[in-house]
Image 1 (tube, rainbow, N blue to C red):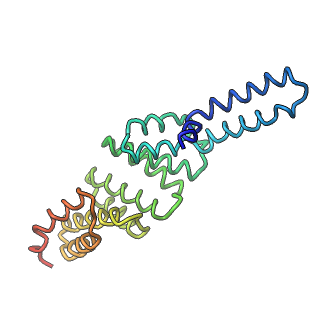
Image 2: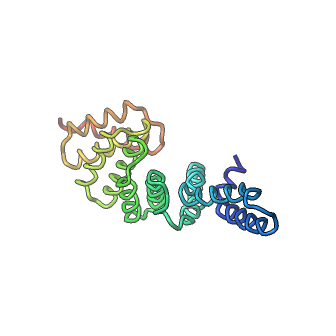
Amino acid sequence: MKFYNWLIKYRLIVGVLLIVAGIAMNMTISGFWPVFPLYLVGVVLIFGHFFFGPLRLIQEHLESGNVEEAEKVINSVKYPGLLYKLIRSVYYTLKGNIAMTKQDFDSAEINMKKGLDLGMPMKEAEGASMLQMGMIAMQKNDLKQAESYIRAAIRKGLPDKENSAAAYLQMCSLMMNKREFRAAKDFFRKAKALKPSTPQLVDQIKQIEKYISRMPG
């Protein structure tokens, strides 16, 4: 695994060195075919660098919570337009996620939209991106747009109960803001029934529970 990650990180350099070595050997060895494997592997590595990119390394850093290293890796992609379409979509989504951790909501929104426009590899991934777009809209106090995105996220489907609970709680807050208390209670019940374990969601449920029963509807 470590070797594979190392190869992803340095495959452009390795690919170029293999081709240079192939050319050097071609000048001293009679014939093209004896050095053909060097050319082939070199071209495959260079192609992989631009077509697939280093997304595996980015995801690994994000999963371990190392946002700074993830940002360094994502900034190393100089030509995102050359990435395979679905990989390019994931690239922009991850870039948006990193921007969100830095509370750069404008950049996060731009990159998330690019990812969604390119199409997501799975419906659940699309739903998760829609949910994040909704949260960005809430941060920008665009509540109408936030509701539209979060409803779309719920329709598309979300990858796990934590994301689903987050979506229902956001909808609960939006409905309370609109004074649609019956809908707010319904979304709250759905969120609570999922029994999320994320501390932030658990705390939100406890806070809402204090006063939601006193609401009319």
